[in-house]
Amino acid sequence: MIHGIETLRGGFEAEADVIVIGSGAGGAVAAANCAEAGMRTVVLEAGPQVRAEDMTRDAPRFLAKYFWDGGLRLLEGTARIPTMQGRALGGSTVSNSAIMFKLPDWVREEWATKDGLTHLRDEAFDRAFERVLTGTSTAPTPMNVQGPRNLIVRDVLDRMGERNGPLPRAVTGCQGCADCIIGCACGAKQSVDRSWIPRAAIAGAQVYTCSQVDRILMEGDRAVGVTGRVIDVATWETVGRFTVRAPRVIVAASAMGTPCVLQKSGINPRGLVGATLEAHLSGGVFAVMEQPMHPWIGASQGWGAISQHVRGMKFESLWADPSVMLVKWGGHGRELLAGLEDVRYMSIGAIVYRGRCHGTVKARRDGSPRMKFWIPREEAHVVFAAMQRMAKAFLDEGARYTFCGTLPGVPDRMTTHAETEGLLSKQLHGGHLPMTANHVFSSCRMTGDERTGPVAPDGSVRGVRGVYVADASLFPSGSAVNPQATVMALSDLVSRGIADLQA
Image (cartoon, rainbow, N blue to C red):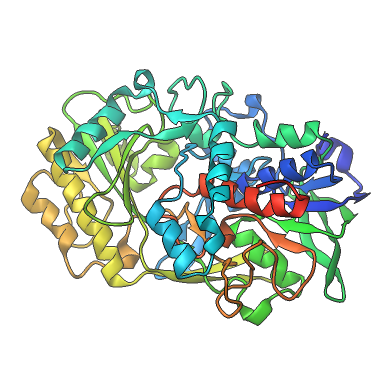
């Protein structure tokens, strides 16, 4: 059963065999597995349920209601980098582009060898991925919903010599409306609120929305439950408190939320909780073509490539609501209005890179996360070099001009190969990257050595009993691809162990 704010005012109390904090990619899988194994399962989600009628094309209002900090949560450090994290039943799977890649073999072997997760070599991990990909109906994006914007990126990647193809996505019957960021009103996206959460509810799980966990209750070194607040997201007021008691707590509150819950609960083995935040670096190239692209037509992200030239790099087509996307466009007043005609000629190529970066997450007094993130100059240069390659290829493909944001020494509108050379300047650094950090992980690393990670290979938090982690926090390092499928597969392994299900 799914409980909404209407029935939760005044607070509640409950008892269970297992509590799952968070209902995103990791939490939803854990909840379904535990509930289907016959365990009394309670899911606690800080955000509300998003209904189809809420998925309007008013992106700013959608972000304000269904994203943490209105979509303006920031990583500080090298620069102030936005990170868009969903706050809703289904977490960020409601508002991402549903791209589903298995963990690359070379990353998997690195985690097994370097980080001591030898069990990830087993066929059980392959079976976990198969369950995840089948359960979300993952398939390549069909050609009939690519649209000109995606296909231009295909041609650009061909020019760059990158082997490319339609991106695998958890979608059935995509209508190509390019509005993934505000959900999927037609119900095509198989976000976990439409796949795993219903399975959990059918199996008897009690799902409480608008219920933000403050801390885990401990008796000695053993978890006995959680406590928190019921929050009405219409006013952001606390309208009740809750306590749920259970001997097992699975924390899946995101790479930023999970370390805060643990820290506020006094759980921080060797000071490693929140000490190892990582994120994929990113950049992008806007291109204004000669022919209309009608970028609002076609899958948000339908085409891409795993780079054959730079290990750990990935290219993607990209679109989102113009009110969000054009923040990087710049200008105001008449200047802005004069340039808006170019939007219908626009295509965008995005770059994602598994760079060697590091960061931290620390809970503020109110429990919210404060993130610091540092980008070495040489890693930023890898992304800028890829942006230059892509900008040149767009120009060769007939773009009138390309644009990468306001960067020192780089023309706002690049019309020749020579003008793109500014992207190779040694004066640029990580603080200049036109980056949004949407792939964030590794804040509570799972490792085989207690000296390097606070979480053991079975997902249990070291030094306490009954507390587990099942989200992107577990990653020992970057996945090099979109992380959702790997989050779900790791959660599948962890929760099957808790529920005593065959992996």
